[in-house]
Image (cartoon, rainbow, N blue to C red; front, top):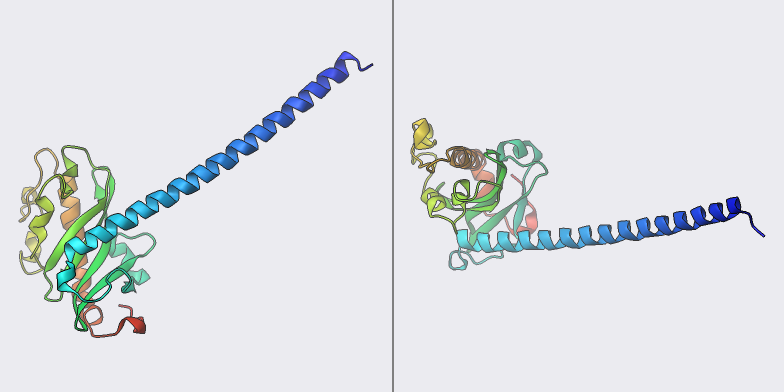
Length: 221
């Protein structure tokens, strides 16, 4: 008959196997949950971006598929646009003429971190529209950059590097042309600064962005 030591060793071995099996099952479940959640988040972000694209450049303004017609952003432009891993510029055309481009950008200096946005620029250099895709700004203060929270973001429509002048691309507290929020200046300041950088990028690459290259050519700015 097995002695007490042998019984204890068998019990420990059995418990260890059970704990190991449980740990493996838990790890697998967590991995599956994380992957499923990741896919759901990515899908939600894509849907939000698609909705925002059509808000900036309505279907009545273009006759191409702006969801699929894109230009890869060159690596040397990532820093200026606040991007860490690149992105794609969506191109809106009408009868082969590029009428607007929609560019992703990130303001890294929000009050609570990164502010992800897309900025639509018309062929004449004016802003077609801006939508905030993601942020972590303070509810009731910094979150007024969202269209559903306030009309503030619509104040950029029609603006350009010439209107207002370059030196006025600041919030009013800094001597510029753009309103800040009561009790929250950092958030609108970050957005204004990043939008100006997008305008500067488009101005520097106008010929490449607004040419008549067909989608199949794969042209890159």
